[in-house]
Length: 431
Image (cartoon, rainbow, N blue to C red; front, side, top):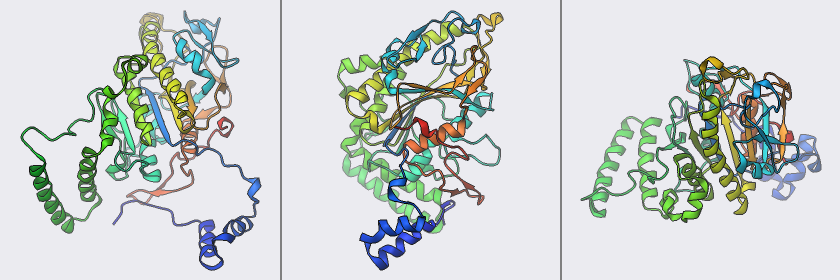
C-alpha cells in the first residue's frame, strides 16, 4: 500500500474523460473550453519551457551587497566597486567580470526575503519551501520534480546532487527513489559503477540471480515501499552500469579547453558535469558551493569565492546558450540568506546573517533575461519593492519546469502538501 498519493482527477479531467469516451476526441477541445467557461485564446500558458534545472547553491549565505545588489557610494558597500553589464541598467560586483557578459540572459531578484536566519533552517526552507519541523521532513524541489515529472532518460536518475552537505534534504516523506543521487567528486565519475576485480559477467549474473530470489521472498512477506525501493534501486543501478549513458559522468570525454573554461576546481567541474547531465535529460541537478559564511574577512573571501563562481557560472550559461540548450534549461543561483549591510569591523570586516533582504538569480528556461526584479533601499537593508518569499521563489522554479502548484501529495500522516506550499510564481519574469 502506498504511503503517499496524489489527488484524484479534477472536474476538468472528468469532463474530458466523458468527452473522449462518448463524443469522440475531435470534440474534446471545444467541450473542455465551454465547460470551463473560457475561450482557447483567453489563456496563455506561463512557464513549462524548462526540461532541466541546474540549481547552483551558495551554502553559507552569499552577501548580496558584494555580488548582485551593489550600492555604489553607500557606506554599507565597503571597498567593492560596481561594474556595468550586457544588460542595460544592471550593475554587479567587480568580482564578476565574466558574468557581466552573460547578464543579458539573467533575471536578478534583489528582493528575496526569508524569516529563517540560521543555516540549517534557512537551507531547509530554501530547498523545500517549508519551515523545518520536528514532525515531518518535506521533499526538496529535486524530489518533487522526480515524482511529478519522472525520468526523461530511462537509464539516468531524474535527480542528482553534486558536492556539499545534503543532510536533512532529499526525498522527505516520499519514497527514497525520488531523493537525489549524491556525487561527491565530479571528476571521479560515478563511483562503484564497474565490476570489482575478480568478478566477471557470469559471476555477476549469478550473484544478481541470488539477490533477486532473496528480494522476491522478502517482499512477498514484507511488501512495503522500503523493500520495493531497495529492489528497484538495484535494478536501476545495473541498467545504468550497462548503458552508454554511464559516460555522462566521465569528464575526460570533454576537451581540455572546455574544462579549463569552467575552471579546474570542484565547483567548476561540477557545473560542467551538470551541463552534461542536462544534455542527457536529467531533470534536476544541484551543485553545492559552500564557504559563503563570511562573518570575518568578508571582502577577501567573497573575492575568492566570487572568482570561482564567476568563471563557472558564466561558462555554464554561455555553453548552454551556444548549444541551443538555454531555452530548455533553467539555471538557478540560490542561497539561504544574505549578509548584513553593517560591516563588522571588530571581525576583520565581516558581515553577519541577514535574511531580511538578499539576491538570487534565474537564467534560461523561459525566463526573461537582462533585468532586475525587486529592489532594496540605498544601503541594501530593507526591501522597497516586490518582495519575493522563499515559497514564491520555489513556485517560480516549479512553474518554469512545468510542475503543478495545486497538485496535492499526501504524506504518511495523511496531510496534503504541494510543491511550494502557498507560494505564487513571479509571472512577470516569464517570456
